[in-house]
Amino acid sequence: MHNTRPLRCAAIHDLSGVGRCSLSVILPAMSVMGVQVCAVPTAVLSTHTGGFGTVAVRDLTDYLGAALHHYESLGLSMECVYTGYLSSVSQADLCRAFFQQYPDAMKVVDPVMGDNGKLYRGFTAERVRAISELAREADVITPNLTEAALLLGEEPPTRALTVGEARSMLARLSQSGAGVVVVTGVTLSTGEQANICFDREKSAYWKSVIDYLPVRYPGTGDLFAAVLTAGLMQGDSPAMAMDRATRYLEITIKTTFGYGTDPREGVMLERTLEWLTRNELPRGYETL
Ligand code: PXL
Image (cartoon, protein in one colour):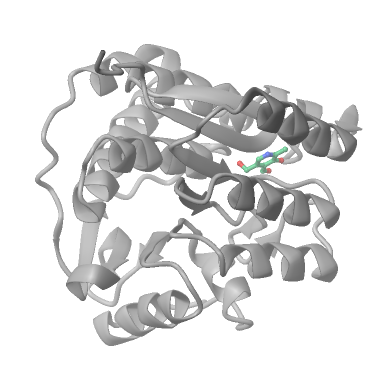
């Protein structure tokens, strides 16, 4: 009989109880898009590390290998392995072991390391190196602008990028591995804020322009990568998947901004998840 089970994605990311980031947003977003998420928590945290003071943390490095071993014994298949927030250097090696166990799976690395030109709390140079090496093995990477610069061993840009600079950044990121590169939160010299993408197979550069709002919420990069990943799994082209994720984040950020909540609490996806179930055809992307 034809197997119609939902596509399955192992999501190797942390679980933060408060602040709507990582697995707390990845699970609902990918589930409503019809993808089964197999959560592989890298750490459990009481909140994210962005502004709630001293966080209760349990690192789960030991657990990662044990979970992989169990999945191996079950002979489970995975259509995608998606990695995000890693809480120790050796977790990058364990992610690599997941990639090796599922050689046919789409490998997505969200190189979660920092934002706004700064590293997140606890990210050492060694951890940056380990995550950068892991990103070389991916099919798809989704850095923000700060992380893109870290992957390239450069200083994060402090001014707007020309279209030529934006394309060059995407191409150089792709040269070290991934065929699909999406960089979020880029200011272009046209004055636009955009997410940008390179699709190596088609040699095509794309942008999805975002309305600027004077606020930043944690977890939006995680939610973006989750929607992008589920879109790709379900047959979106890279440009369509980027645009789907961009439009969804725009709706969700504007909704949250409208309520005027504490930005540390993240975005109100509970109010907007329904949009993802409509499976609209994204058409807001443009050539870069
Ligand atoms: O959204 C990125 C992220 C994920 N997980 C944890 C974080 C952050 C950003 O601060 O602290 C635990």
